[in-house]
Image 1 (tube, rainbow, N blue to C red):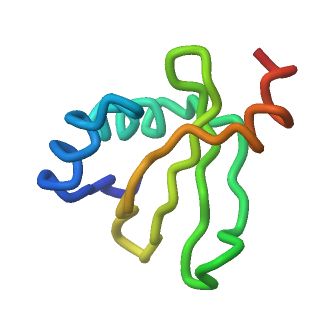
Image 2 (spheres, rainbow, N blue to C red):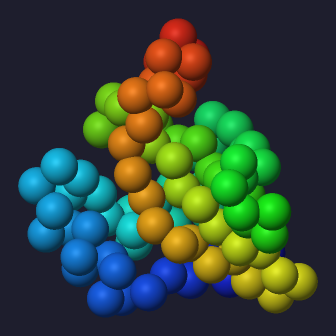
Length: 90
């Protein structure tokens, strides 16, 4: 199993944002447990993929970079466009 990492400063910044309040640590645990709706290629960054997860009953995108040894979570954000697609699955 690959190590899942993220930037602690980014985690704090996301937690402080009143529009997000999403914890990257919880997201990492969810991914470790396989609680993922989908994995998609990033539309803007060819070296990244995007986990699609359900967080607090809403669909969120989690861009990440994967190497042989680790998965690095770049950020996490709620997505209305993805929620329209994936909300029927929960």
